Image 1 (cartoon, rainbow, N blue to C red):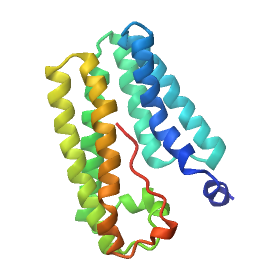
Image 2 (image 1 turned 180 degrees about the vertical axis):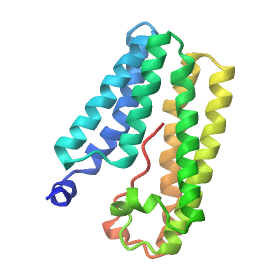
Image 3 (image 1 turned 60 degrees about the horizontal axis):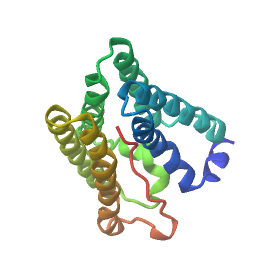
Image 4 (image 1 turned 180 degrees about the horizontal axis):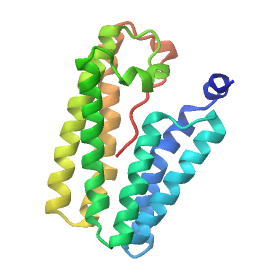
Length: 201
């Protein structure tokens, strides 16, 4: 039953669930007079809402969305409770490192964990294709972790948030698209492909 419901969800809805909370965080930051704590509260609320919508639409919350949501709620809560914005800023770094670690562990055990999360989005992809895709995303997330650390520790909150929206997010989308030629060589059925990517940290 859940698989049937899931197949009816449009790519646009999934994209909104993944990226909507980040866009709300960005908008709230500016509409609240650059109050990062109020924006963080709205970020948490939007993330919780995305998880609820996911349950209503699919009957469950995907592992990646759940992982991301728990980190947003946890680090967002610490940010507000301790009134220290460094928690919400370091959250993406830890998210990227943990996802990269999970992907590298999957490669080490020869069981690509990315396939468990995005298998529906890449029909026909061979095991070799999944291995290469997992490796590429793992390395990419390490680069994102290093970039986030550099920027939040050396730049203003406004610059950091702009980087997440106009830097990290477009880079992630372009990276997902850049992998398509390689995936096509390893059995990907482009006619049925629904380009997807892990949620943003």
